[in-house]
Structures are given as C-alpha cells and as structure tokens.
Length: 520
Figure 1: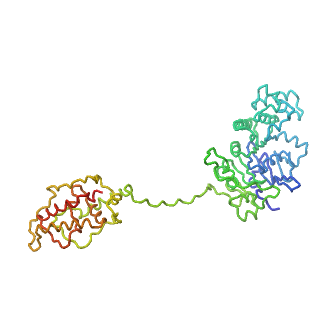
Figure 2: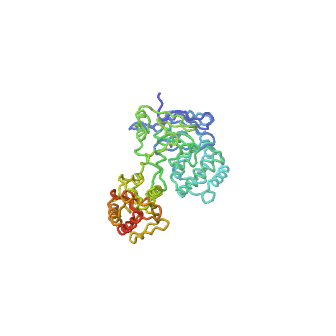
Figure 3: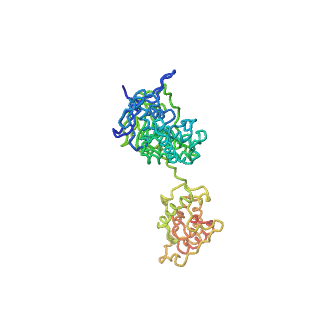
C-alpha cells in the first residue's frame, strides 16, 4: 500500500515512549460515504512530557484522543501504552487500563452527571473500582482542596449550580482521583473566559508536576498550546503535517499549513489585524479528501507533484519533521522587492549651497581673480573657458539666477546695494615706470568711450560668463565694479596708461549700480 500524505514514522522516538500511536485510522460509515476522520496518524509521548495537538476544527484531533481511550472504534492502527497493546485489549482489560489513562472533556458541564453532587462526582472512578466509602470521602475532600474547591459549600452543589470554570475544576479533580499516568485534555479551556483559562492552565501545570503526569493537550488555540506544550503535533484533515519542539515549530515552521495557522492568529493591534494573510478557503470534505497532499487545494506553494504524489513525514531539521514536498527553509520570510532609488532632488539653495560654495574657493584661486591695472590688461580675442563646476544653463532673468545661486557668506540686500569700497592705497596700481610708446598710446578723451563700450559688453554678455567672473571674487574689498574681466575688453582698444584708466573706471561705476553678481 502506498503511503498517504502525513504518513510515516520517522518522527517516533522508540520504545522509551509511554504512549505510541502508529498508523491510526478512524472512519465512520454514513449514507453519503465513509468519513475519513483520522488517516494513518502516528505520534508518541515520552514520560513526563506534554504533547500539544493543534489544528482547525474538523482536523481529527479530538477523534485521535478519544481513539487512544478506545471511546471510538478503531478502523486500523496500533496503540501501545506502557508496553501494552491497547488496540488488542479486551473490554475488561481496557476498563482497568483507563484507570491509568484519564480524559478531560471539552464541555465540562455536559461531562458531569447532573444527578450527583460534586463530592460524589470526583470519586466516581473509585466507586467503580469498589473502594470503601471512607476512602472515597477522604479522597473527595483532598481532591477538591487541590483543585481550588475546598470550601464545604461546593461539596453538596449540583453541576447546574457551578460556573464553567468550577465545573472544569471538578472534571480535573475526577480525573486525578485515580492517580493516572497519562492525562488527555480535549480542549479543556476553549469554553472558558480568558481569566479562567489562565487559572485552569496553571492548575494543570501544578498537578502535572505534583502527580508526575504525562499530558496530551488538544486545542485549536495556538497560544494556549505553546504555553503548556513541550512538543507540538499539527494536524490537517486527518493527517499529520508537522511535529517537533514547540518553540522550533512556532518560531521556524517547516510546513506551509503551520505558517498559515500562525499568520491567522488575531493581534491586539486593531490596525494590523493579523500577523500575516489569513488562510483562505474552507476545509475540504472528509468524505472525499483531495488526492496527494490534502492541503494542496489551499497551499500557496502547491505544484503538480503535490496532486500526484503523497508526501511522507521527513526530518527537515534536527528534532523537526514535516510532511511536505516543498518545506519552508530555515528563517524563510516574505522577500520584498528592493526599493527603487529615489531620483536626485532638484538643485535648491539648500542642496547646492555646499557644492557651489566649495567651487567658489577653487575658482577664486585662479589668476583671473587678481586685480590688475587697467593700463596693463591685454586684449584677448579667444573666449575664457568657464570652470566645469559652473557649466549650467543660466536663468532668464536676474531674480531666477539669484534663487538658484548659492549666496556668499554675507550677501548684501538687493534693496540697498552696498557701495563699492574704494581701493586702499596698497591696492592702487603702481604707476608704470616706463612710458608707453606714443604710437600705442590712447588719449584720455578716447579712453572713456572705450570703457563705456566695455561696460555695455558686460551687461550684454551671457549670464553664465557673468556668474563665472563673479564667482572668482574672493575678498569683499575687491568688488566687481573695480574689475573689468579680461574677455570683456574691446579687442580694438590698445593698452591704456595708468592715468587714462582712472577716469575710465570712474565712468564705469554709475553703469553698474545694481548689486554685483558676486553678491548673489
């Protein structure tokens, strides 16, 4: 016979187990077909251990617990308890074995005899074994004290007079009165309030340590199962999906179904809602389960192999087993696409001030920034190369240029332009010792028109060249009004004498009355 999905015994731990279940099958014949409640489920529980069985409603976890006690008829499989075959035991022997295997049922009130008082319910098992009345009375008082119902008023109460938490305490006391080795808890806190759940869970833990119990804890609440379990068994539609250490299964699930269950847990954060995307779709009918892997109809990782081939339980990591063709890798998370690089921000005074300010000292160090006498400036016909740091389109008007240019350390207000400082005596050009030959001299009257033409050329020149020339100013003392760029000199004008340059500079000052380009 071919193995079914979730089948296999690779996760069983040997003969030291107190309870061992192999290939358990439980089916219910109906008019509509055969309900496959449990299909070849295998697991074991070591002495003193708590095994949590978790899954959706209808996955077969409660049926598995009842089958261990043989409260439901087994279709196939093998169950060993303390080295003895339960599945082959007679009815009489099974009643004796149940003294060592007790069960706490999901509905506490329905599990209690409504016609008996609390003090009689907790010792029903002793009455069946024929214990004397004195022993039953002392045991009843002791057990009620241990489960938190020591007051005398609880002893004569009827089940209908108890709350849900009190009724569950009575059910726990009834199970412990026989001093069992194995305790099967079938969703013992699912019908209780959260505060009462904590009390019952703490009580089970205390009694487990006190009586040295081995516990099979069945629940659909993932948080409750993790709080009390050493190992976890995950079931889906009658199959085992995953088995392993509780912390490992919860922190690094290997089966996609386990991951989907964890992602479906509601969070206390109302905006987020869930840890991840909730599991979609309904549980398929156990009358006609899917072929191959039974979870494939809802699995986001399903492929053709999942429908054609049924996976067996295999060890994914040490101590962790899963029945999946494509198990989740260690630390698998949702991989987000890399974020696209943001486009470079447009140049603004804040973003460009540092780069342009760094370029200004470099440009200021060029020889063109030095102030030379007007008489010694040579005419140049080739255009001056603009530094690479300043090669960009100039704005159409002066206001736009001011908005996109980095201000100097102390820019002068546009409304009140600072008057040009007069050059100090140390900065005045030294007179030329040797006179210029008469053939190359220009009269003082002719120097003024030449200066005016040079000034007009400065205004009409492109803004980029103006910015380059303005950026070369390094000290406030040498203002732009006192310097005529070399490239702006009219080629036809020869060099003038020092005496002729003074009136030319004086005539150029009224024309450049607006703030110099260096001020922006």
